[in-house]
Amino acid sequence: MAKDENNRLLIVEDDKGLQKQLKWCFDDYELSFAGDRESAIAQLRRDEPAVVLQDLGLPPDAEGVSEGIAALQEILILSPETKVIVITGNHDTENAVRSVGLGAYDFYRKPVDTDVLKLLVERAFRMWQLEEQNRRLLNARGSMPIDGVIAVSKEMRQVCRMVEKVAPSEVSVLLLGASGTGKELLARAVHELSGRKSQPFVAINCASIPENLLESELFGHEKGAFTGAYKQTLGKVEMASGGTLFLDEIGDMLPALQAKMLRFLQERAIERIGGRKEIPIDVRVVCATNQNLQELIGKGSFREDLYYRIAEVMIELPLLKDRSGDISALAYLMLEQFSVQQGSPRRRFSEDAIQAMEEYSWPGNVRELQNKIKAASVMVDGKLVTAEDLGLTIPASESSGLMLNLKAVRGQAEKDAVRRALAVARGNVAKAAKLLGVTRPTLYSLMNRHEIANGKSNA
Image (tube, rainbow, N blue to C red; front, side, top):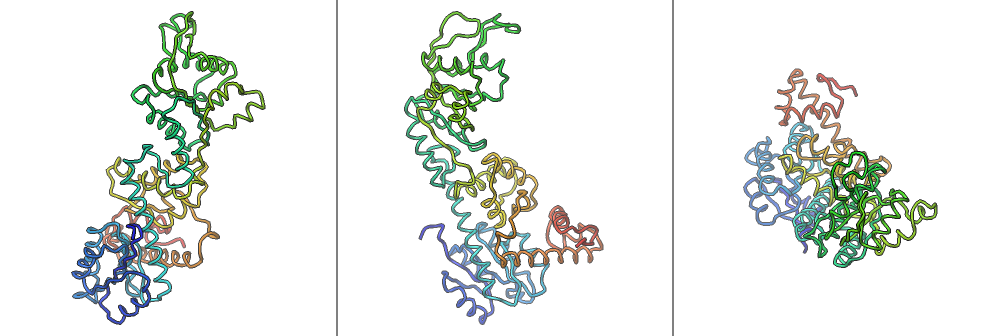
């Protein structure tokens, strides 16, 4: 069995009758049972289950929660990837919320409805499998042929194969794709996988430089060539000699400059502005655009002969929304990178966050995903990044009614717990946070989420 197919379920429950019921309910899984904290930890070490279903009332404190909370904390220290679903008493909302705050994946309140409990366990296994796949990707990324490129989808694997094939050659490459799809990253990959990798990689964005400066930027100028030319300046083409020149957004290049670029590509020599001699240049040219160059040719705004010079091999990058499996893999990689950069604790995504990311259209592609995750990693409270933290929502029509009901139940329980804690603490947020077992920032976040101010709900 592959590591990401772990279907081991540990049930921590001291009631023998309930153990028997759950054994029948979860006969599709590899089951193990424990009746107290000590045996639960022993089973965890031995079996390494993906999911733990744990009652909070464990002996010797079967009527309280001290042993259950201690078991939960120890499990999460020993195996932070394990999904723990805690089972609480029918009216024990505070400890349910406290458990989730400590890192439990979810909670369920008695009496047991096996259909709902099976759904929760199935979702926990799916989340564990998804996170395990992404952990393996993170561990393997150092051996990936194209550094920084996540290629789970067949579309991106095909792109990577084309880059690997074309890189060692000297043909010109045209990268086609919408803004934010990673064209410069792949241009650098062409350079790094070529025989020119020890030489310069020089990039220039043809759309970001004023038209009166673009020729000088590309080909350089001699001293006195124009007003303000106080010294000889090398252009990007000359600076890239021996290496790779990357022309981004070449579809925005002016027709007059297109003629000079064509001449350079034909003769592999340039003249600086104001200069009188040709300078031979040995450079690999890679271009990119988010425009349809064939349409521009038809309109007369792009030269057809230049097109054939720069497009000896064309590689089209897919939209992020069309890269099945890549979204969550990229998201986990980015979240880990930002957490390391900020020195923050390791975080993970909630199930609604994963669903929202998979269903969102991502008009800004990878760049938009990166921006949303960076912002969420700064603003999130606790270890769980939700769809709300990402600024994404899941349309109600696209979610199952049962899942919505479960979310509504949990949300209402959370709201009730916060309101009661604030009431007991007479509006003192610090005391209320202590009662709930969460930090003050987390309690403020919960109050904002449920529109609770000064202990009074607006809903």
